[in-house]
Each structure stands twice: as C-alpha cells, then as structure tokens.
Amino acid sequence: MLEVNPQTALPDAQEGLSIAEAARRTGVSVHTLRYYERAGLVVTTVDRTVGGWRRYRKIDLDWIVVCTKLRATGMPIRTIRHYAELVAAGPGNERERLALLEAHRGEVTARLAEVRESLDLISHKIDVYRGRLAAGDADRLWAPDPGHD
Image 1 (tube, one colour):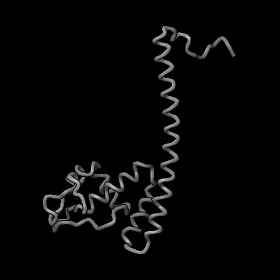
Image 2 (image 1 turned 45 degrees about the horizontal axis):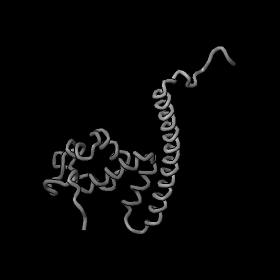
Image 3 (image 1 turned 60 degrees about the horizontal axis):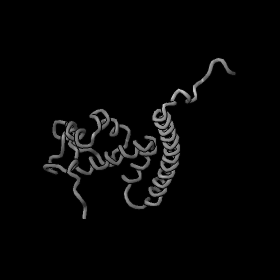
Image 4 (image 1 turned 90 degrees about the vertical axis):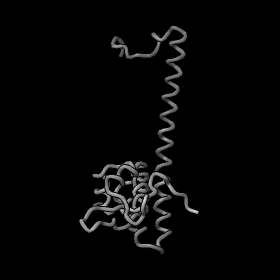
C-alpha cells in the first residue's frame, strides 16, 4: 500500500497545484522547478491550464523530491537527466537504472567516509581544547612560533 506524503498530497488531484504551491510543498524555488523542466529532469510533462499556467500533480511533486535528494547527494545534473530519461522511457531499462543508482551510492558512501574521518579529527580537537581549558593550561596548545623555523 502506498503511503500518502502529507507534504505532497493534493487537495484535488484533477486540478493539480500552481507552480508557487508546488515550490512550497517540495521545498524548492519556482525558478528551480522551471529549471528542472527545461533541463529535462522531470519525467512527465507538467500539465497546463487553458491559460498556460503549470499545474503540478502528485507524481510531479514526488519526482521533484527525488531530483532534489539526488542533487543534494552530489549527483550531477547530466546524470539526473539520464536517470529521468530512463524512467520516462518506461519498462525495460531497470538494470541500467539500478547500476546508475548503485554507482551513485558508492560515491556518496565514499564521501560520507571522508566526512566522518574529518568529523573525528574535529571532535578530537574539541576534546583537546576542552581538556586544556579545564586544566587551565590552554596556553600550551600549539601555535605557530615566528621565532622558530
């Protein structure tokens, strides 16, 4: 059973949402929504009213959230576009989609390991400073000494 995301649930799925409301619900700007469409990142054609105004459906909002998460993890726009093209093409390319996502997960995992290592160093430095400040000898912490080479 699909769970309804209250952030993207639509009051009337027939009418859809304006671009401003879609931006509010997805957490991206109106400019970003338009860019995603122009860049070929949206897998469906966003509906338009008779007057030409965009009307976003739940499927559009859910996909935009996917795009923003992929982008937030560092996936390049060209890769998101390729993924969107695969999804839009429909069944038959699931292995390629899987390979693309697995490769990206590997890159994200490697970056997370680097960030964890850096965070460990920062935590160590914080512990040193706290310990020295508590002991009253913080003035002994290393600092460049212009008198020594």
